[in-house]
Length: 295
Ligand SMILES: C[S@@+](CC[C@H](N)C(=O)[O-])C[C@H]1O[C@@H](n2cnc3c(N)ncnc32)[C@H](O)[C@@H]1O
Image (cartoon, rainbow, N blue to C red; front, side):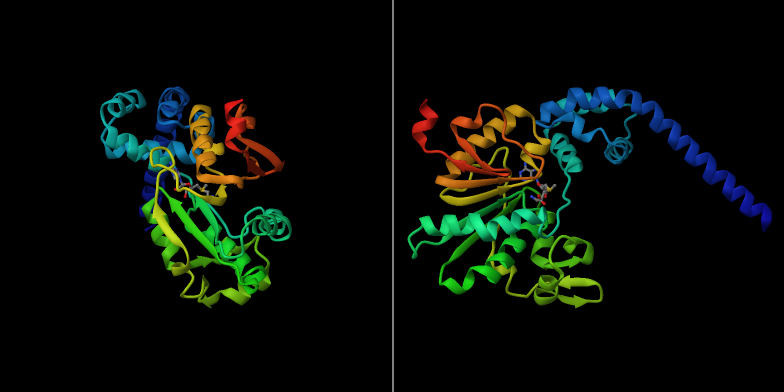
């Protein structure tokens, strides 16, 4: 028995060492691979220079029975479907309720009252959550609305989009682990979620109160006539500057004049966006009128 354990231990260690060495060898090429391939997909390579992502890519290489990253690079050049596969492999879908909690305070106290104050009472406030992950952001907005604005007889229309269908499917389930709520006031979680053995479930009508759309910000046209757009921790975190510029122009088109674009805490609009947006208070930018665009 002891001998069997020793053999098992030896096999596991030998396998680990082998895998470690293979990864180490590939890591020399890895940076070069990122630098050449990712900008072609519109992605900032430095964001993906991480061990976890490297493992995912190497896993993909093994699935395809390829032996080096340069082989994979050539494969990608010839195969549009594989480029799509790689993009989705690289996608980070982490989100949480009330992410950047101070923003939700500012939305309640300043930004939503400002937008509502400018709108005729009969007109609904239109909000688009772009890159909504599994619904944490749009559901947070719905809860905020329900808590602070729904009694005033105003209407809000909320559209949530993501390029990853699986994220939207999870959003429709409306159930999340406790960790997803760590930034949200506990009283709100207790008020809105039923605890089903550790999964916190939103009210059953919540998914129906949001329009969920599969939409890719890189190639699909934007949704028009919004008063408020959220695009956090996506375009201005992972995409290259030329792609950021293109999508910033789309957001300008998609907002009414005076509408607001909300970014992630560490996101910034690219240089040159001053013709289109004015920074109100980080991370909130106001859409300028078309007259500025011409200047
Ligand atoms: C890191 S999450 C951010 C979620 C949320 N906005 C937040 O800040 O918590 C990025 C999301 O963007 C989505 N995404 C990635 N590329 C996209 C694209 N080209 N178009 C639309 N959504 C995309 C991913 O599927 C993922 O759900």
